[in-house]
Picture 1: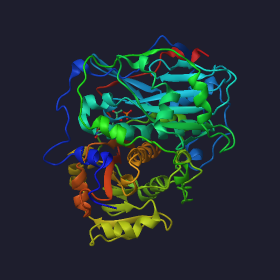
Picture 2 (picture 1 turned 120 degrees about the vertical axis):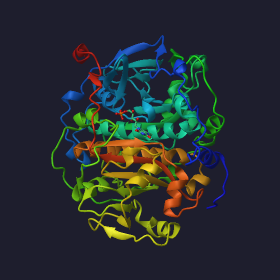
Picture 3 (picture 1 turned 60 degrees about the vertical axis):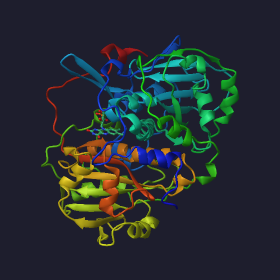
Picture 4 (picture 1 turned 180 degrees about the vertical axis):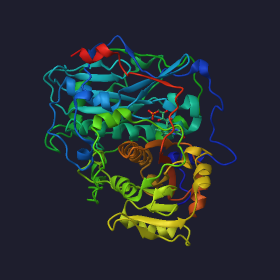
Length: 534
Ligand SMILES: Cc1cc2nc3c(=O)[nH]c(=O)nc-3n(C[C@H](O)[C@H](O)[C@H](O)COP(=O)(O)O)c2cc1C
């Protein structure tokens, strides 16, 4: 692996780093007049209303995290509605003074929500064959294309990004946030599907241009005045036996003969370009079929049982990001170890069932308040084979003392009070210090140099880890917050890594006892009569 490999992904990553003395290029202020509309709407599409079913799903989170899924629900309109409700739907409206904003089941950097969700479905009960866009504001599917009722192909959920939504606030770093948000959305959909007994799977044998065709992103007339969307990924929904349906190419010919309708809304009156954003999007698209690169995730230790057992649907909808932590709440070591075990992929436990690849991220943990564990810097080595590689890459004076249960690959590097360090590395945010523990996710960029589209995948994996942390935090009576703002090379410097080498920090996270902002009013996600429609 070359330290100086310079292609689109590497160059973008370097240019979008925050430094202690200078942030990545960004607007520096918020242009409120051009704040992007958080909801994409296609005018002129037939709308399919979806019922609200989530409250009726009693599947326990404890069961799902142990890999016990309920019998698969039928693939029909009401259950697909529940998938979108719990995956990408609204969870609440918040109000403060005259301001009102929606929060969703999936989190998003700056609550800007660049991720859009689509459904590609053959004829199903209550749902004619079509390509649909999910509009979370109204909990409806907008039918973008009418497809032949006779056509057979797998049911797929597609995710896209509207990069402008993030660029408006974050400038050049926006592409990273779109990718992490995509990872969160994959996780959110995998958890929502688990409540229905479904196991969605990320498809890798589909190219970017195929995805664009399948989701209608290449229908130029629909986007004439509107901000474009870039294709991210397709998830195939397996409601029956795993492996029974895989080939989205079956749908390509069907979509080509479909009758397309609808025009995307324009989200902002004016836009500002950030040179480098378009380039990294192009540099990281998937061109070739890559199915042969898949690895089966290894079997890993099971997390310990939960002290209590909330329904998964409730947990998903109550998930929120903490704005501040109390600085006193601690977490028992057993709970912490159990959370760590959940971050190790297991081929039969959601959301890892959706993920086909061996782990490429390891976690650095700034442990502040874990009862029974010394405060300090720890490392969760998610691929045991990487242990010697990481040891060799980092400072020689780290301790690497094994901690916790025998089958948990957790190591103490440095016993120390790292609260101030964690906050400083996370753009001086107190949430990284006042929590029980903070995380820096370190991604392996070795393969990214040869296969730049893996740049996106590294960030998806980070988002997926973040989504597990969010739900695990809620289940433990704590709260999590994703942290996209961090000083990249300061993290590398602390660890003794070179600035542009193989290991790169891609995402931070923090978990602790939350302080509620009592000034905010919380409102229901949808009007009451929504629930009564069928
Ligand atoms: C990729 C990503 C980066 C984030 N970065 C930060 C951050 O640096 N600081 C922060 O306070 N919150 C951060 N958040 C939390 C978001 O602000 C939060 O998800 C959003 O406001 C929506 O609220 P919710 O998570 O309660 O739905 C981040 C979230 C994501 C997904």
